[in-house]
Image (cartoon, rainbow, N blue to C red):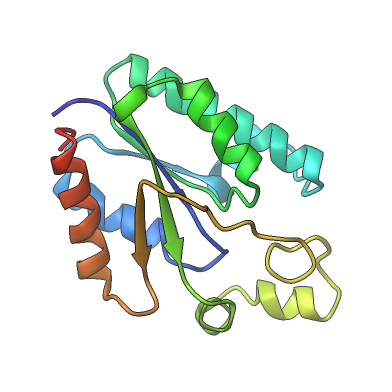
Length: 171
């Protein structure tokens, strides 16, 4: 297996981290770079566009470092702007060892899955700049892989990711 960076993007509660946790059972030594966890200690809690841009850059540099040391990683990050994801691809600079995976799920389904109540808080105005409510999510136009967690089971989505990685000689 070759090291890789799989950049998973999608709305909050679309299933990104859930898929990664399942992948960790199948792929030895797989590092999960979870956006929420990293923000706790790696970036300020600044959800402005500039703050999100900086958080994405920092996570991309961390993914590049892991790749350089032979550690396969999956980034589970909303990454709401196309520009951020393009920048991540450039920063990591890994050619075929970098892939963007769009975890597609409708806003309604994401809200239904939201156990933390973030969407409800955003709708009440308690959280400002929440992606999908009062801040945009720019869906990828040409992702390397698309999984639809609204219509696929966790197992199907995870298996599709593993199949994709194998097709590139990465897993």
